[in-house]
Image (tube, rainbow, N blue to C red; front, side, top):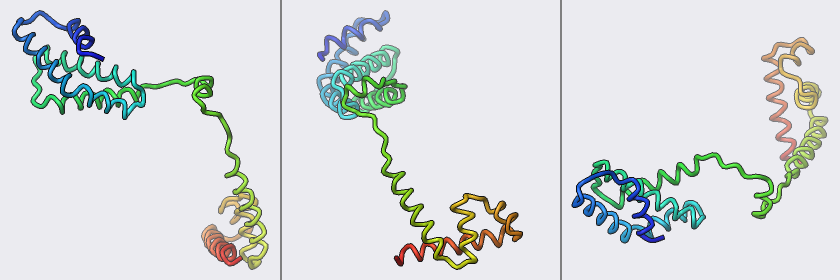
Length: 186
């Protein structure tokens, strides 16, 4: 990307103004592009991983800066201003909703898959827990079966057993603690 491409875009947004002021602004932008163009492009490429998109972002950065200058804006530190504009353009790019079709993802090398290994571990842990529950004292075995095998709520267990919710909650907690100890001691 060369300065003349940026200049062509900037000239389309120019308004009627003093020719000397226009030359001064053009000189500022040319110097800014020479000094910061490569750094801005590499920053944009680092953030987007797309060469053409990064060049477009840098061009848009200079165009927005030119428009700001034409409207009478003051820039104290050109480098900071340019990087500020570029960062917001990158953020705006990330915020845009991008729709990728399944075909595009497959072409890029992403294969859809379902990871069922986590389910297997949960199943195995569930079977181990059921076996360990059988080793608990009778007082906790009944509550733990209802709570974790039958998946009943504390309220439902309290209704079935005729005990208060608080007693059932305490027994479920203590039963779980005993179950953890059994699990770690095996």
